[in-house]
Amino acid sequence: MYGIAQVEEISGISAFTIRYYDKCGFFPNLQRDKHGSRVFSDADIEQLKLVDALRKSGLSIEGIQYFVKTSSKDPLNPDCLEVLKDRLKVLEIKKAEIDASAAMIEKAIEVFRQVDGPDASDLMDL
Image (spheres, rainbow, N blue to C red):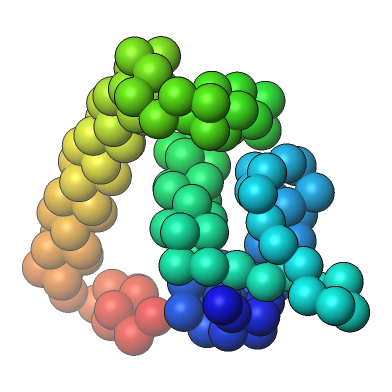
């Protein structure tokens, strides 16, 4: 069992975000110690990482709440699998867009490197 500071260190997710996710109801079975502090199991940490990935994929808070509620009742629910597949598609599209943007910027950098003059060298120092 881990306290929130340990979970922050393990997961790389800020304590503020972890508390927010808990308030959103993303950890329906989260335990508390005798002082009322959150106590996380290994399974809770995996749930946190999944929730964070879903959030970063653009899934709304309401969508994550639906996913958590549905998967906690039936981990093999086909709706949950569809949510995961959809999020993966979204991330694949975002990744392709980012890769294309990076390639365009790399190309622009090469153009700037080929230009002579004080303005171009000033830009390369940035």
